Each structure stands twice: as structure tokens, then as C-alpha cells.
Image (cartoon, rainbow over all chains, first blue to last red):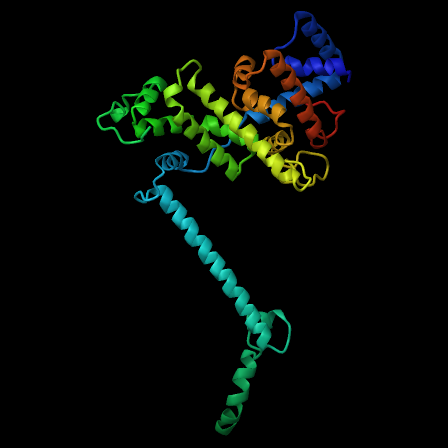
Length: 143
Length: 202
């Protein structure tokens, strides 16, 4: 694709072409499939940019007003509750993670083996072994 | 100016609807009127700021700062330009300042200001890895600030080229040439993701 035609094409989207340049571009578009393809891609790119602008987090206006008032002692509004919930959830998550690490560390330090079962503190006995050993002699007496 | 609730203002019952009336009410200290202005222009400021900085905590801060600057300048706002244009000008200037700050911060580590952006996932066959919109936004943030600004104002905010020039305080010719170059650069950034160049799309 010729650079001058490419430049004309890109300028054409914002209407920055003289009548002569417009004619030149239209002729080129009629002849050149690659240029047409480029035109479609740029149009798609522009549409993608224009579509669906993102917004701020919820309670933006409340945050602005809060900052303007400079008042941190106001009655808890929705935003404060939202922030308080975030804080509580974060603290619970951190405490849980720390407790889990401590538990795994304790289990591994008191265990002879290094395995997942030892890390989570799973008992080494199976149900069969628990049931068998203490009750077997008693059951034999009754049989 | 002290922000306080002014009782018995015309904001009750949505009687005030024009920007001029809301600005007048805000000037006289009506915080409800100012909050209404914030809600009214929040989306427009968000489009500008998030377009420039990405959806990050700094964008929220810059958005808030935009309205705080406007509030402080309420007395000097004469309404020569529309409120949307006025707010967008503040938002774009604050965003450009934030990008400069970022660049300084990252230059300490010899990295580009855009290197902190998430990498685009691998593409198996050169096709678009995820939604066009996400990809184009990613590409936009790889552009230099002056190119990014014209695309954000023209395409995201939908300003005309004349308005874009007015907001950026640059000649119209500069805006037009930046627009063309910005789109070429963006197109080059996105080229690997648009598949086979020889295939014509319809």
C-alpha cells in the first residue's frame, strides 16, 4: 500500500481532504482491495474505541462531595458502609490466610513425614484400623 | 467557598435542570446542586480520564480532582465554553499531568510508562484474543500521551475536531495531523491481532 494513499485514507475519517484528494482516494479505493480492507479495519477500530466507555466505581459523586466537605466524621452513608464491608472482608481474608499458614507450619513441625496429609493434619488411621483393633477381641468373645 | 446545604432552593422537585442554574445554585453553596452536576458529568469525565489512564485507582482520583478543581473555580467560570468542554479540559490536563508523573516514576526503573500495562494474552492464530474493544483500549494506552489525547477526545468523548482543538488549545491542523498519525500508530500496534493482512474484511 502506498504511503501517500494510506495517509489520505486515515485523514479521510475526520473529513480533512480537499476535493482533489477525496477523488484520488475514491479512485484508489475502487482499484485497491488492500486499501479497502485497511479502511474497514480502521473503521472497526474507531467503532471499538467509541463503543462502551467505562465508568468510575460506584458512589463517585459521594466521594467527590465527601472530599469537598473534608468531613470524615459524617454519618455513615452508603459509601462508608461499602468501605467498611471492604475493610472487614479484607481483614477476615488476611486473618484466615495467616491462620492457615500457621496451622500448616504447626502440622508439619509436629509430623514425621512431609506430605499433604501431614500438612493439613489428616489422621494416619483409617476407619477400618480404628474399628478393627479395639473391638476385635471383644467381638471374638461374643462369637 | 463554604459548602453547606441551602434550604428551600429550587433543586427541590427537580425544578432546576439547566447547567447555568445548577452552577448558580452551587455558587451560592447548594451542595445538592453541585452533586447533581457531578452526577450529570461523571460519565463524560470518566470516559476522558479512563481513556487516558486506564481503569485504575489513579483514574478515580483524577476524576475526583477534576470536579474539585471545577468547584474551586466556580466563581471564575463564566460559561464561555459549555460545561462539558470545560470539565473535559480540566480532566485531560490532569490526566496528562498524571501520565508525566507516571513516566517520571517509571523512569527511575528505566521502564516505559506503559510497561506496567497488562500484556495481551497469547494469540494462537493471530485472531483477536478478546473483545475488540478491550484490545483497542490496550493499544490506545501504548500510544504517546499527545496522540492518545486526540483519540480519546475525538472518538471516546465524541468531540468534533474543532472542539478537540479548543480543549487541547492547539491549532486545528495539529489535531487533524495528530489524529491521522495516532490512528496509524494504533493500527500498527494492533496489526498482529487483526489476522491475515491480505484477507479483505467486509
